Image (cartoon, rainbow, N blue to C red; front, side, top):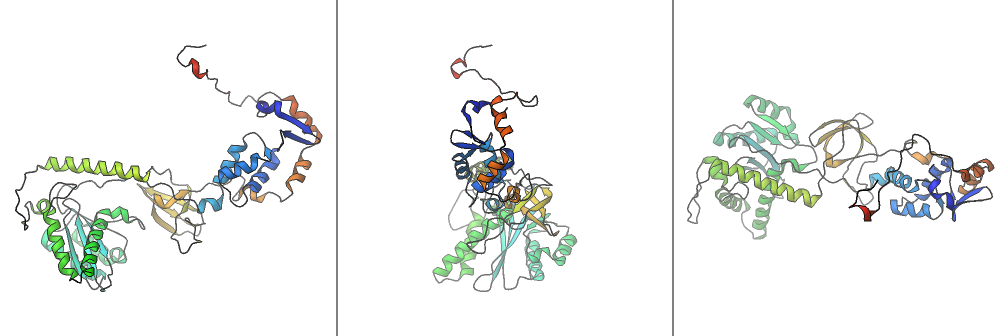
Length: 403
């Protein structure tokens, strides 16, 4: 009997059952009380305090917490879930086998920069473009491939140039496996995005000093290709060409074996992963196929909510990429960080909001008849299906064997 622990505190005043100065509500009135206590979209703590000051029933705190978590308005304005842990990219078997490409720009000078990064050596090539059509992109890539050969894998974002049929046919003709990253999730192509940031920094420095940014960019790239990378321990040029690039500073070239490179790469990646996951409080997503989720939306103004108000259904999940479907049938691919599970009220889409709008005091008087009032003090026996409470010995006896 859920009322048994508080039986000594219950009393009857007229047709109302009280626990102290709080009204004991029957089941028929609890949903209405939760809705009234949550008016103004109070948080969980505020809703609980509001309820505790006026009414009581067994499990009132759990009911308030569940109701607040299932509130539609609170969910679409809540903070996004924590991102998933990082998934480091496996090191390819050799140089120039797996590339990441991206377009940087357009710049104020009407230029764009096509950047291609080798995952193995971290060596990157770039082309300055005045047009970003698919034909121009293919022409620039062919210039790079003519110097280093065709890669096995090419990874890009979902830009229109890379999604076109012309680019798809080009990759098929050259025997290149084209991978596209998750839309709206630039981190999935982090290697090339990091190089874009470095290039933009040098361009801004050159512009602020009144220098030719294209010339300054060439100087930076020359130095970058010849110095050791902090992850691999070798310079990009040495890993790609199996030789060091000579710079202005004299140096003695150390010898590195391939297994040392792989050990260092794995060690550094794991350290970066642990650091990043700890800083971001990363957690594995529990979103699964068939779940109802809310999809993160871009903010337009201060009134924009973090999530779209229309719940979507998860129809496919691969790794940390999910495909969701809207009620009108449109499908979108997003990273799991862009979605969160949608909690629904058990009584319907808006839960207790569908309850009849009667005054709370009148509902109490109408629902509590004389028979119910007299039945409470008898404290009937607990139903057979109710789990028994686990009896634990006092803390002071934890070092002793007790019966």
